[in-house]
Amino acid sequence: MSVAREVSRSKPVQSFPELGEIRPLEEIIPRLGAKAGTATARVGSVTVFDRALQDITGALATSTLKLPLRLQERKHLLVIAWVLEPVDTGGLMRALVRSSHPDGSIWVISYKRDHEHPGIPTADDVLKAALGAGWVDAKILPIGNMLQATKYMERRPGARSASGGLRGRSSYSQ
Image (cartoon, rainbow, N blue to C red):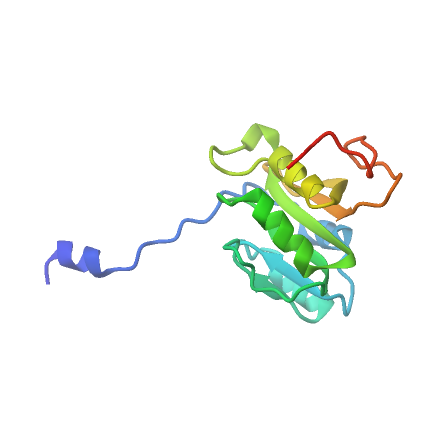
């Protein structure tokens, strides 16, 4: 068989997002709020936290970033979304909110400003989409030299978001 034919028959190689150096999992996982018995989901192609989350919570639902997400609605108290590839941020945030429990939190992992990639949603893009979906940023956690995780929670009237705005009022619109 010719080399050209062999190459054409092979499956395309999937490229994984660039992660850079990641902080130790024992520093990150507890700060995300993972606890025994917590209904937890991971969205996206990055699996670096999966084993630790599954060990702590007992189970881990997973889905790709492709919409619609393959997660149960209104169930997960902890959702971790790796937004390191092109995606419709508005549609993604609405889907994440649908799968999250009202008392839960959504952590979106994205590139830090100095490491943003063309075509990949920025942390500001995700913030605008979250505010449009009725959720606000509550905390920012550095994951490594290139990545940050932003915690989103359901908007509570009168409370301030981490970005300084009132949770019940926003200048962003969808």
